Image (cartoon, rainbow over the protein chains, first blue to last red):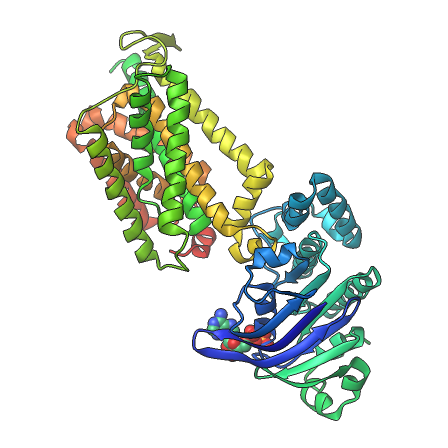
Length: 244
Length: 296
Ligand SMILES: Nc1ncnc2c1ncn2[C@@H]1O[C@H](COP(=O)(O)OP(=O)(O)O)[C@@H](O)[C@H]1O
Ligand SMILES: [Mg+2]
């Protein structure tokens, strides 16, 4: 579904990603873990088209997307839930979701957007209660649900999430991860970036570990969870155990 | 001072005020989608008026106005596509210089096409000496046209921004450009559209006001200054604030004639703008938080 070869990317003169290769197959949950500043968000921004790839290939369903604008990539079925949620703060919850459905609106008609709205509101009942409220007035957890819901409105075949658990209370985080599992059960493919490595590996099929823009380890989640190197660096005492 | 005279001043003030408000809303629409001030905003008003006068020579008035508005919108789109679209995250200073440059080019072009003559569309109904009586005040029917058409524009814009998909797309770009692009919305097209919309409302305002104020190649400049002052006063980006601030400035100017020589009338807008910038940089109705979110 997604295949990346020798990807290079960065900002100005700063090289962040160096010859990074990875892939995601249909129906998988794949997680990317790594310390703060490792380049996880840079990777997702490059795949989503917000940053231009400087070298290597990004193939989505066989098509090269490395040079496409973000709005084109969304139309191809690859959506990003950006870091820090980035909801439209001055607009209502419902308007946020409807805008997420822009792709559907353009492809078919308004009815597809209405259907998507029902589906997302079913997935996150709290958003139904908040429908008319301005997105900026929601709690962090609700904003995260809204950001995920907005991305789902495009009916992507691959949904990428950048640290959905960031800054949220443990109980809320648990709910978010349950949602991710549920999304996969419904046939979605998820690429999940997390600092909360243990929780991410618990839900994921496979994982990649990146350090300063380079891939250092990859494998099945159980394998990474048991790996002494990963345990030392990412599952150590500093990391709260939320999933249990 | 008798009541009728006061009311006359009030009506005159409101008439000018609502035009200022439309110009200010034009500033706001572009500011909200791009974060820049388009100093060529006044030129759209002039172009609308001038084009309509020319077209009216061989077209009936309504057709001339509609066509003039459409042509001005096309000019707005062209300006954006030629000068703005290809810039990659330009600095605010660069944008200011570019839009001032555009305003000069448009003005010079207008001078070549139309020369220095002062023109005006005919009164939409009646003529210079017809008057209607409303609440005991006698006023020109054109005043009612100005108030009516401008009010309809304000309401229509509000409905557009809040209830149509396209309007929501524009608001989404204003709220969070990157997130809008991640929804598949073309931010660049929204910027073009904001120029088209601003040009359109400016041109229509230029048509309805021209029988009262007349129009010539450089009449956009003064309006742009007033409109900019109103946009600042109402809080940049805030269209309802612009309406309130526009009416306030129009009425203040109008009443100032009673206490000050007419020559000082134009200084009022600038004084108010400077005063507001010193005391409340976010404008009378803008929130400080909102002002902080913007680029400057
Ligand atoms: N907008 C930016 N401009 C310049 N450098 C950036 C920008 N965003 C991130 N970086 C740098 O790129 C590196 C990787 O950042 P990022 O991808 O955000 O890491 P992560 O998401 O893994 O925490 C860091 O060194 C960071 O300082
Ligand atoms: Mg990050």
